[in-house]
Length: 629
Image 1 (cartoon, rainbow, N blue to C red):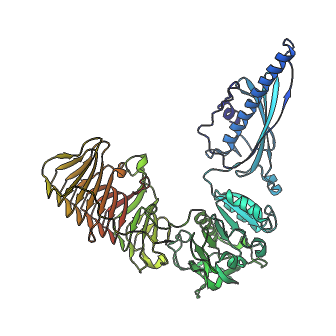
Image 2 (tube, helix red, strand yellow; image 1 turned 180 degrees about the horizontal axis):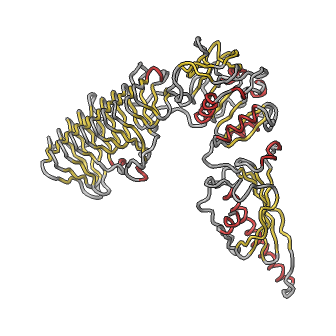
Image 3 (tube, rainbow, N blue to C red; image 1 turned 180 degrees about the vertical axis):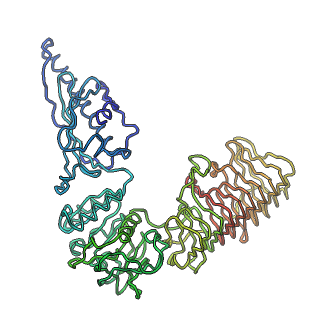
């Protein structure tokens, strides 16, 4: 196993060439130190000069063998497809193997854990330890020694910086060890930092972690604002830090087992129903915010029978108490009070799940700030996703949409802050955002539908202003009707046309060749089963004043792998688009007024809608691979 990993990475000692293809990326490389080259023998038949030259070459080759061995070890312990800590038996410090063939040489490798956590020694190697490997490469009677230190963590794991009270590792049997074990059991990579470390140490740690978790046992004055300015997420149990982080002016503690879930449209609480939930098996000290709150605070749970926030979040950019904005995502958990009789052992599975999801949410980037390069579906006002409708995502860069390629990364957003103006009766595989300052639980009406991702408020408004009418086009050729299969444009060149109305008759096809731009001063209509087809390498831009009417089973570029080749702009103040039953559209659409998708129609790509979006038993497949113009 390990030896096989080494042999699969054979070195060519003469060139020093080593392959690293297919291995997991190194996340943290602390140092590569080459020690010394020790001559083990001489070639008696050579002259002193020739002997020196030979030894020099062999020394270089021996070093390459040693470095190749380190490459193989690095790839082995960073391969998230195996559990290297147990494969072939539990690993321990010392020599892992000796004199393994490597090209024309051999290598011996030993391992030493150097993570500074003596409390882990009895557990053996972990999947997020700091390990120093020493490789001795031998070639032509000469040996060379090289060392490499790596943090053995999965590239995809959430990296948690666990902030402890004046210590560098959890004490065995403590609440902190229990929390650490939970986080590792959830697949997180956990490293530790003492609350008393200097700001410079926190600065360095923040660069290599996704989220900081502050245990309630810390002394608030030790942490203070050391993490406030970082864009990584912060999850805090320590109520004394509420004012330091800008959550609220103060906080209080009391004993209970229960919190009142008041918002379950957020990722952290979407597994719980509204109302009281027990999160502790025995009465524990819980905390709640009091006084003046952050301007951007979103309360997920309150102290029962009050309006005091007990579990709450701030997204990146949200206004803080005392001024300024949150640099990254922030979560205040509802339990703990430093110096009290609180014990985390009393927190039950409900509380554990809140903790897990809080870390996962905080580790992600913040809320979309608005702008055409962020949400796939941008609407100025009302959104109605009716029963039987689905919204999901895919990447056109990987090919056409299929059920097997669908994803749950669609991002849909509206500027509205009015109650129940985002109505979800269907299923949204992704995130839904309401307008700046809106309350998602009020604006988003989950009327029998589902949202798989986050619901939140935008941090800045979307630009959904209507597109401008194009200039520089030739004069109008009048109305045009396509009554037989027709091709317009020239391969390899650009062509512009201007029409009053453009109509494609039933079952007829308009083929686009080359780069074509069409300005339509009135409206465009595709009758039943009409087609607009893009030839190989062709692109089409449509600028329509009043209306685009796509009738039953009609198609405007039905190739969902070529969304980048179609752009449609409804520039009139009343411009609207109707996609009829079983119709198809694949591209970028910017409509000044309204977009309606009727039964069994399909939209592939991205959109900006100036007023209202209605999806009636139809599907939107948001294209993650499409960069909006």
